[in-house]
Image (cartoon, rainbow, N blue to C red; front, side):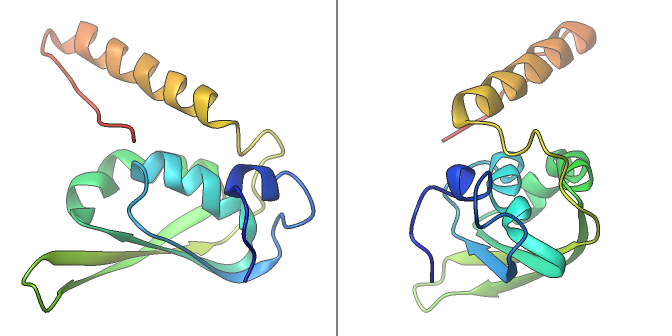
Length: 131
């Protein structure tokens, strides 16, 4: 077990060192992927627990690929309190490019830029929740 900020650990000694990296629903799946996939070694896995994985997975697929991952499967289950959760399982299939992970502010700014461009091109308001 390693405690620390994922984006810092993945730029330093812990980059591509772990068989399995896990995370709770602490951020948008695109952001979470950028923090965690760089920590997994080739042949390893990143497993994210999310509330609504289906909603978050599609927008994150491009980021997962860019970061060296490949979506494998999603396992959905119900907790004793009847709330739904899912595990999004991503395999690490290639090395993560050196510029990643960026710091949290740069990731959020990049996502806002994409959302703004999507809103302008479609004429519809596109929103994103980045925690």
